[in-house]
Every structure is written in C-alpha cells, then in structure tokens.
Image (cartoon, rainbow, N blue to C red; front, side, top):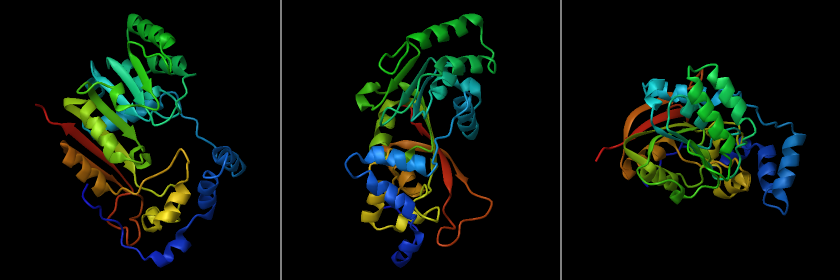
Length: 290
C-alpha cells in the first residue's frame, strides 16, 4: 500500500488533544476481565447504545443507492452483502424485500441480534409493495434462518472467513461507518474484490473521525502509536488511522475502478491543519467486467 498522507501536526500538542476518559476506557480492556470492566465503565458514564428503527436498513440502502445514482429497482435479483449490519439484520432483510435474491451479513464478531427479524419484515412490508405470496415466502425463510443456520434467502457470518462466500458471487457490497473500524482494511478490501462479481458494485461510507479519542475530529492521527494502541485497547469499536487517500489507493491497487467519490463536510470547514480533509466520504467502486 502506498504511504498515506496524514495531517501535519505538532506532536507536542497531543496531550492537549487527549480524551482521558477514552484513554482510561481503552486501558482497562487490556486488564484481566477488562471487557467486563469496560461495559461497567460505559454504563457508569451513561454511554448507552442507540436503538435503531426497524426500517434503518432500508434507509441506509436507499441512501447508498442514491449516492451511486441508482434506484431501488437495481436490487432486483442481486446478491447483496452488508459488512457489519449493526444491532439488527434490517439491511439484508430490506435488500431481499426490495428484490434481492439473497441478503448476506458479515462481521468480525457476533454482534447482530435476530430477535426482531419478523418485526422488521412486517414493518417493511407496509412500506414496500409486495405480493402476499412473496411476503409469506420471506417470513417462512426468516423463521428458518438463524445465526448458525443459513437459509435460502439469508446468511450471516460472524466472525466471518473469506471462504464463507464464494468468489465472484456477490453483486452489491455495502457498509456504513464500518471501514474505519477494520483493523486490516487492505485484507477486507481484497476479500471484497474476490467476492464481487465482474461488473458488481461496492459502496462504502467511511467516517474519518477519532470517535472521541481526541478533541479534534482528526486528532488521532498525531497520537503516538503506543497511546493510540492503548486507547484502542481490546474494545469492539477500535478504529484505524487510514486516511481517505489510503482507502482509495488500496482499492485501485487491487483492481477496483472508482466510479464516484462524495465528500461529506460539516456546517463549517475543519480547522487547520485539517481543512482539506473530508469528515466522511462515500466511495463507489466497480469491479471491471472480464
């Protein structure tokens, strides 16, 4: 991978940047029973997980397709893969209700809950016109499907292996605020290239923030590596230091073709030395047809 450009900052100001609560939270995960202590720590500081609405996955898919200048009909008869579906499986379920022939979710660890699958489907049936026969087929399939039991319409792999998904088998790969949490992005991008069919599309929206490690959005880039690793600890939500340039150059080196890049900024531009960096970005890639 080509060396990535990072914000030019003075290391002497890293202490001023530090979020010491985040530093302590990462450090305790390195201790025996650290993850248990971390959960207690998060609870005491009222860091509560958000509860996603049942149609969250549908909104994510609609947003990513819109950014790719595609409509929902593009999903018909496609095999859809979502990286890190989140707390529920609404993305792959929404994809199938939109017409996908298969909805797949993968994650680095078992996080997604399946308690609301039927409720998600019923909620989406009220929003997306679908024949009774198709609704019944999807509900029957969801009754069979579980984390350990793939069905004809759905699969979930966590932790996933590259061999879980056949090469050249997936039409659409999507993720939202996920690639910044991947510890080895280059390997996952390589897997995506292998899984994607020639002519397939890959859409990632990536958040480049420090996720509370530092006071500045991009402050983690100039943390000394030992401090950065300590703050990451063994938390499930660890982040990497990849810049947008690193993501783009890596994907190009693997053979992806960049179709569109969308930069997301705030109400005001970031302060120097970050002014030219996007707060987040959506990258739309294709795999060249043979």
